[in-house]
Length: 280
Ligand SMILES: [Zn+2]
Image (cartoon, rainbow, N blue to C red; front, side, top):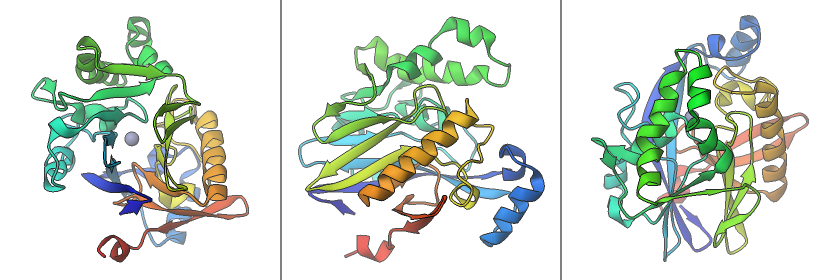
């Protein structure tokens, strides 16, 4: 679809089934009731979406899918990227919302960088956290592979001088602004892309379980490093984006993960884009 003069393409990495009852930080009965309310039941499907923005002069990719890290229903980003008609060498800039493996995995293929001409951008807090030996040693055994995942992906771009960390709250590229939305991870970032007065907010994992968290935005999940901070970021980002009447692109809402937010008291209504508008 178009955003002003920019072309926006959502690229699917696939979907996985998640145990929302186990993963959400609230009593099981509440999650079950919230799912029933929206005609779903546990487990729920979760998409993994990445976004490609063609400004006419630059090709900007936001997140890269899980690559070879995750199960057989995922890792489809690279083939879908090719179907969209682009070649990896054409990508100029890669913006990471954060460095969990479902966002950085597509940076490499068979141990080599997938995007040889691209510069990777992310919040300095994020790379400092994941590349710290001290943090790796302190991490629980099931979390340790996440650290190695960053070394094996972002690490290759750092080694070749293709990594540019930033402090959120600035314009890092023309028409691209960063907004700190920490909590899910220590340096989680929302990217605001603007063309002709229209805004696209790429919110990454500000929301993981749309079926529950639009109606109950203060419910965090065990994917969040700091659940309270993640919930506060969700409320702040959604409030601001709704006020702007911005288009939203989310990593884990049903593909293509593009839509608008309407504030309804202390909650939000998600209005997905009409796919027919993208087919004109
Ligand atoms: Zn994610």
